[in-house]
Image 1: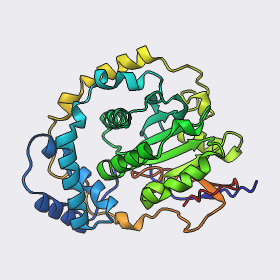
Image 2 (image 1 turned 60 degrees about the horizontal axis):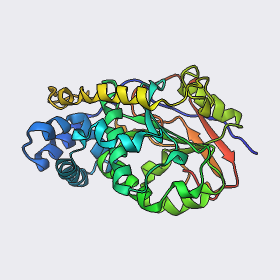
Image 3 (image 1 turned 135 degrees about the horizontal axis):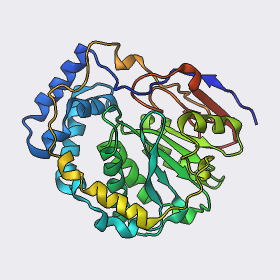
Image 4 (image 1 turned 180 degrees about the horizontal axis):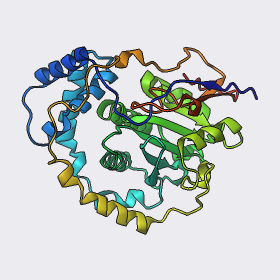
Length: 332
């Protein structure tokens, strides 16, 4: 195994600031979208529009088109109206749940365990994913926009995953929750997963693909990154932490029911006209550390795009792990 540990710049705890030019683009998207009311008005804050612009490299027309499609989807799918009772059966095995801790950048954490898949229904699985995404956003601090996915592959085999569900997951995440994923760590994926990941790569946008990182419990650099990102006392033992508490569906159900009660006020809150600070270095100056062809290397990256969009942390706490795993899934 060859390991190359690098230092890279990263962002941590404050919302990314924008230039006057970028604020002008936000205003232009508003003009193209047209007048809004109700939940659509709440959804289209300056911060939200900024995420769509970032997802489309600050192309106003593309961002406006993308946002219009999301508004149409939200009007028809009504994700904010999904409640625990609607998805409780999908949730009962703990295949996806919001952890009771956040990472050191204040991001909510969704834990996923593919081996606990308990449904053949694509519709049901996607509805539960959407519920989890909405719940993770509901629990974000005002200073944070993104979440982390921790994916535990213990007990995994190929019967636990499908191309159809993966394709629909990518569609929902990329088209309707742009820039919400800060980092996805695939923890101890088996060799049999590698060809599947290579096969689904074409359906992932570059920005999404760059946020998916492989981590391994027997690698010291992975352990260091997990320690840098999480409080190990709260992190599950499956990811190298010290918490051995098993998933309890009854306790989790109570948490979610309490969260459901917060949803109406979330969608009737007041939004300031300009919630994104102006007049600082351009977002476009902050780039991911990417390789166009890294065929045998996997990375866990704590970087400006893959780890978080917001604020700054001590560079000594940020690392890039490259591992030679002889894998066919090239990580950028």
